[in-house]
Length: 467
Image 1 (cartoon, rainbow, N blue to C red):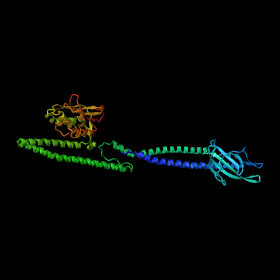
Image 2: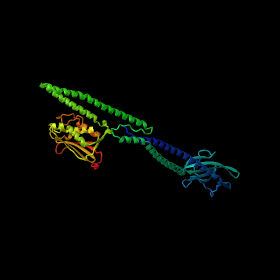
Image 3: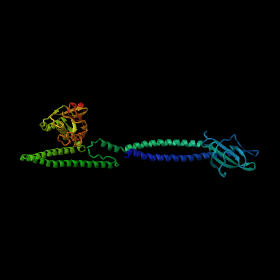
Image 4: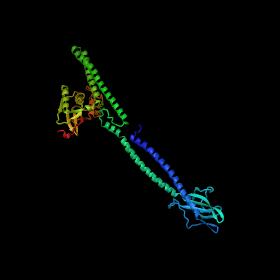
């Protein structure tokens, strides 16, 4: 799966790459322009220095001399960094002054010529020119070469480029900072939408507010349309559950009624045996259909938290005990509820929570005895612990093997095949607990038996529960 890049990284990439390319192009252009301008300036100064030498030449007894007392050569880059070399000689004659080994110009000197040479291990930029001079009655041509080492040019160019590069880096940092601020404020509406969605309950399908910039409006519209489709799908599923409940319960109830009537009107042993088996199967089918419908209705994505209310678990457990007491006592079992005082209320759906408690009681009644019918007590307790309300339903039966504890909430899993049931009771309990942000746990009691605990978040701090 390819790495997911954030919008911020994409924007920084598309801002940073062009800026970096432009900065590199600007530095290269600046380097070329500065190099040309500096070379032209140095060359002009070098030519001016060569032309000033003409005023230093004089004749003594027909020989050409140079006034060394007043002679000096200065260029823009002298600054103590460069080296100056010169040579003056009569064309077709001898040396007047300077360095004999300084290289000759590459072409004839009809006009001043600039060229690069190497002398005494130095890279030099030289200018060569020729001018006429009157030596008595004789006209002669004098060749002048002035050369300067290139260190000063390189130093000046480097100084300019270092300064320019530093300014470019500072400008780049400022540009990136401004871009980050602009991206942060530009993405603020998306962050607000993201936070609004994270704060929502998984079951809250109300439309998002569309007070957002026009660029984000299509996203909000798409999210709201998706929520509308999900809500309609949930409503359709709930309606289907109701239809299935009606369509299946009616024929199963008719089968049970006809079976009971038939049992009263016939005495044939074989027929009665078949009718009893039909009655057992229909009762099992009725229970399974009822559990399947409860399982479908308690799916967490179908539970609407907006209809939750404050539920008194004490009263709810009393109601569950009242509804199951008759069947419990008919089996020779006992049902006890340790009625506590000042238990905080919890937020939830009272009908679903009632189903949860009844399922836990019925599960203990059916499976606590293992292969034999259970004849012991079923205890219900409510306690408080660490800002939670703990509901515990326990028995004193055979317990559950440790290896099977993790499978108890799987659909249709039955750890006790000897007892009737659909294998959906604890799966329904788990879904109801999940929808109420409660934690479901199982344990075998040290003194024998099995306990199921559901930890609900308390509505108010436990320290204030007596107020």
